[in-house]
Length: 492
Ligand SMILES: Cc1cc2nc3c(=O)[nH]c(=O)nc-3n(C[C@H](O)[C@H](O)[C@H](O)COP(=O)(O)O)c2cc1C
Image 1 (cartoon, rainbow, N blue to C red):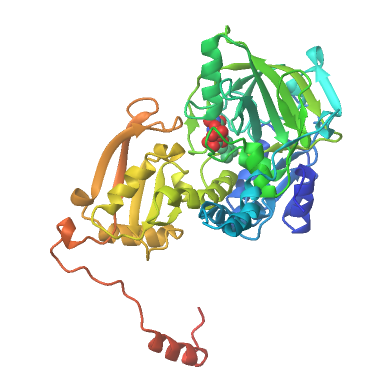
Image 2 (tube, helix red, strand yellow):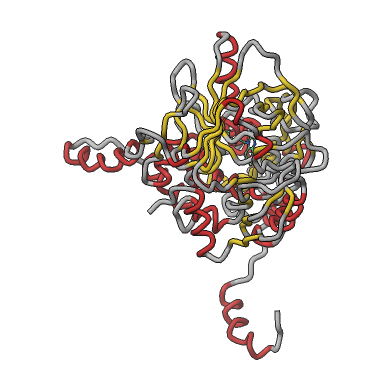
């Protein structure tokens, strides 16, 4: 059975012994960050935390508890998506992609269940008031200062919603998008929306702003854990994240009509902010914000969302994450994406064996790729291919190694790569789009990229010398030492 909402996810985490309930009053103004940061930096990602008595930025007790670090370990990420190992989802996708059109009618019929799996779980609209709409605050009743929205770091521009699914609709195709974008509280009923220019919500906004049309926006907090994750996944704009979440859950996501805008919102959310952007209004200053690079992202101009309603379920729990110097909780969300989307990358670049983005590389700064090299120059083909795909286009450094290198072990990957390169020969620079959060590129979102071919070099690639083997002990010797180990008196 899939987990339907945040409280079910918290319950499952609790049963797994990975939840700490914090009874002590803790301020959402930085204190919560310091506590959560210490946990997230501990081995394995630390426990999930439920702050039962948070105090608000303006003082006073919060009516809602705050949950942090729910997705912050490999185990909890798998729990969120209902699998033992995240690669299981990649394998499910690979099976779908392997569909060959059979010749016979019988073969075609046999294919139907597999095909049906994709379309089986579209989001389901429910009638009436959803659990997430038990209380509806509208107009003058909306006061975001009453919610436990934290100020994370000392130089942050204000309180930030960090674990939200921002729901918008493509004005051209009508396809919905749900994106995890940070949202800064700038007034009692106003927020600034930090969707970066490469993201789908921003594309919807550009189109609506060009048309001069008001843009409905809903900001959902909580809901089923697969939907929360899906908001962070780099899906193509043509795929509705709630459909993808349904595929992950093997059960549809239930949606209800928003109360004050023309969008649908998760029926199982803890709370939802509904609102709109007025295209006639100037952009507002958003930031600075202590970001997942480990540095502050500088203040910049983003659209203002007017909040027309806050809807809440009974006894809502406020979900939150902090980002900052890695490793943090977002590493595990990104890691799920790495495992789940690998088969899709292999579809166009079949020589890819594995891929890994180490925590310190914060996704776009460093990508290790192992390939089954079959012809000269293939490492360059792979890096150019990756730079041409979706958000991979933002990757700053790509290092390509041979298939026998375990890229999921960055120490091994660095060791082999640094041994295998002649820097002047094997490093290439190119130009391209750069992540909005990169503070070093020569221009905003435009700069250089580095590709390193750390594969073994072939004669056809101009390498005339002999290439040495990796040192590996022979099996017979290892066995003999295994047998005598206990008698050696060596404790390791
Ligand atoms: C915790 C967390 C916070 C994020 N904050 C932002 C953000 O403020 N702005 C943004 O554009 N992307 C942010 N992202 C990355 C996007 O969620 C991610 O790129 C996602 O694929 C965007 O969805 P979209 O492709 O539908 O636009 C964040 C990701 C995580 C895990």
